[in-house]
Image (tube, rainbow, N blue to C red; front, top):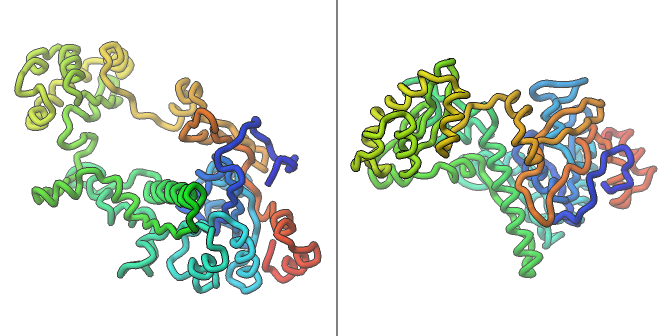
Amino acid sequence: MNNRDKNLPIAKNHQQILSGIKVLELGQLIAGPFASKTLADFGAEVIKVESPGEGDPLRKWRMLHKGTSVWWQAQSRNKQSIALDLRVKEGQAIARQLALEADVVIENFRPGTLEKWGLGWEELHQANPKMIMLRISGYGQDGPRRDEPGFAAIGEAMAGLRHITGHPNEVPVRAGVSLGDTIAGLHGALGVLLALYERDARGGDGQMIDVALYEAVFNLTESLLPEYSAFGAIRQPAGGALPGIAPSNAYRCKDGQYVLIAGNGDSIYKRLMALIGRPDLGEDPTLAHNDGRAKRVAEIDGAINAWTGTLSIDEVLKDLVGVQVPSGKIYTAKDISEDPHYHARGVIETVEGADGLKVQVPGIIPKLSQNPGAIRYRAPTLGEHTDSVLKAAGLTDEQIALLKKSGVLA
């Protein structure tokens, strides 16, 4: 896609850091597409392959407007869509042709699927040695569970995250979003950037990046495994608290809302205790450092709860900000949409979909001072760029028409 596509909004002019990098996205739903969205936000040209007829199932996930998920506007911005049947030889041949011109191929099918279609790593790498392939799957490209289907919820559980999320003696809960998918997508995008650096800055060849959903989540589990390895300790769910870090919890206010207070820095803790009228706890030498406070966390939390229970959440937050104690309320989507700090930072942007609906979506993250990313184009309709992409790849109008008639394209 380029600036000649007059039906799409164009962002302000600036050189984007991944401009000139071509990405072929063969994945669907969340993990692989989130990785390519991240690359597209910083200038990569992303061609998204969707199945004719229904397209990416994400188009029908969650809440729809005129038949299309509003989530689609965030996940598929800055991409081109071609409708191509990868299950037939003609479709596979076209995908192979596009892969030979790509810098990066991204897929999140079950291991072995691309090989079945003649689009596996070994075959494509031999034909295009500079091509980088990102492969995201539930359990990775090898190992005894490689062939099992894996979704984010299963990966989060296998990584240990689900066990520690929630309240003691209750059913373990999930975060409410598909963390495993997006975390895997971010790891995948990082892997692509590392591989591009090796290829372009050091003169290396392309390489294959193997990301497993459970491993991406496992990478974020902090002290979970070291504590078990050293002490045999199995961390348990702790509700709103952060075990072993004190004080850090959710505290109920007079109006029934909960305030989050992270008073676990040594000097912060003293300011917090002075504020709530408990200088005795603040000056106690046995509570001067976190290890001592962790042993008496119930007592400290009780003192904080006694204070927050007498004030509204707005009063609590005003007092905490006044003494520079990290704190905040638990935001809903409404809070996010209306928050002036979000808007001042440009973290919320409004896009207009092909159906005319204007929706707020997350802005570009992270922020680069010299080469910031941008939302250049709205999310595509199914197969919107089939003709233009395939013509650029060398197919004639007659060939495209025949492939559409046979159902290979749409």
